[in-house]
Amino acid sequence: MTTDNLELHISGASKMPGGEYASVRISGSGKITGNLLCGTFSCSGAGKVEGDLVCRELAKSSGSTKIEGDFEANAMMVSGAFKVAGNCVIHTKAQVAGKLSAEGDLNVSELELAGVCKVDGAVCGTAFNISGCLDVENGVEAEQFYCAGVSKIGGLLNAETVRLEASSQNKIRSIGGSVVEVLPKGGLSSLSIFRNAAPCLCSELVEADTITLTRSVVEVVRGGTVSIGPDCEIGVVEYSQAVHIDPSAQVRSVVRLAAQAALPEA
Image (cartoon, rainbow, N blue to C red; front, top):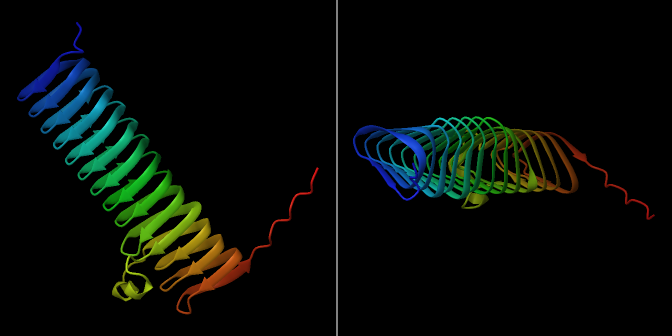
């Protein structure tokens, strides 16, 4: 049966076959058996797809949605709960004010997170704006990573630019990039409001070309230009160009890295 021009609307309790639909709307309790391909997907009730879901355009969930396979969409908006048993791919932007969870990997171009996002695998994308809670079992790869909320990353956070607000809380195993900054919005003068608060960043290693830290507990800091500000506890600072350490910071040792010799011409 060809269903690619049909609209599927479930407003009561119903079970429908998978297939291809122009749009799918669930406002009751709906179960779809098999893989589902649709133009748009919307769930404001309780929806379950017993297979993969591929959405060519926008997928929205203000209710409770469960995908028992992989999920792929062009864009996504979640204000309820959206759970994916496999991998999750969003080609453009995902806006999450509710809870998004994936048992596999998450690949998203842009993530705007005001709610909760939990990923059991790894995360890959371009731009991440976190004001909610990001919990990733493995690593995160991005171009821009900004957090004013809470992040917990069990592997490497690899990004061109990492900016963590001093009001945020971040437990990240290791960070690598070009620029890493942990600073308050109001500048260093506003740090006094965080006295006796939990550290903003806890990490084993921070490595980047330019590093600026405040309110951070890090075992090893390695970079070209390194600035260690107030309320920091650092094991070892390794730098190759310049270093500044605030008198109130606790640093066990500082090591100047030797510049690499230029390779001889052939």
